[in-house]
Length: 403
Image (tube, rainbow, N blue to C red; front, side, top):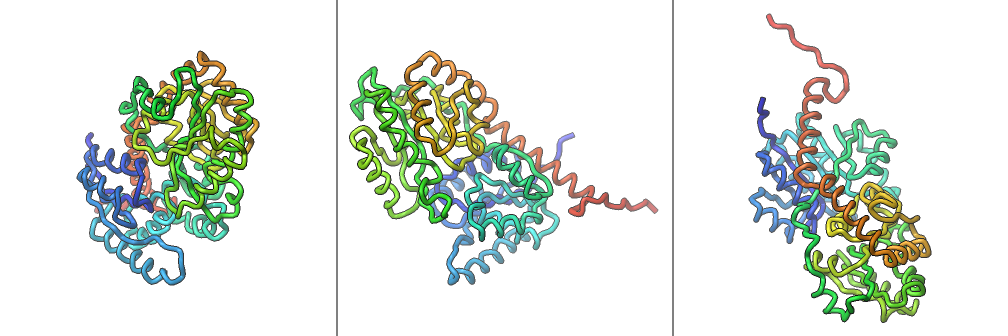
């Protein structure tokens, strides 16, 4: 029996980037559901959503200064009014500030299924943000972890219901036959010059836990560079990406670190690149040394390109990379282990290619957007059925006897 389409309110705290959000929202709309997206500011993501035919509302709920509290409270009221007007079956928040707003709006529209999906858990390192999240978590009908590790954290913290759903992508849009010669020519790389790259945004943060090593582990990659160059003297290293937000001081600090390590001439900071497929095609090994991470879009793309990969054994990275099968995992914040793993893959192109091929085959299944979106829809249906059957108390609702 065909089930009726759903009305879904999707809310994110991102206003730029957000491919993972765009993919899920667009995928649900393609499955016939009516979706309204809410963002905290106009920007590139809003433009892309509107271009895809998605109703997109801008409600400025983001902020952290005491003087912004009246504006945030007004934004919360606007989101609640939107929920009443839109009449959603599901209210689904992504990223902490959106999640908190959705939990509040859900109280004003109790018949909707309340869903939170967490792309990461960096905020849990802040006592205040941790308290805000876990203290309101029981308002959710369902918490979706974007990897097994995140789901386990929320399950252990007492979430009422927890599931896992990866943020998918258009896996067939990434062609492993993409040529890398343009990238290699741009940086003067000869045919046999080994090239290792880290593809990641730079995230400056004031959180104490990431004061010495940033979330993505750029410092670990740079510290590993001189160790790698002792084993592979011809190698060139690339830091691909830039600050996602900030004044540029974090990037400058990383560049100064490379200079102090004596590798400034061997490490290229390329900045943001629109030609990510071409960049990946030009690299031999792709590295993700994060100290906090979900399943990692960058690594998924690298494996879909059939590349050799090295990653930290943290968060969702073991979901993406199976050690010794599709790549190598190393302890986090360990430059020596990272350098050794990079050198190992550079020295064995046959193993590198075999791992990349198997990694591509697994990612084609695990991160296919059509499958991940269908999985999210199934979670919605199951949650709504449960809500109608037993309510939020978890107790079976009394059925009225016919007269």
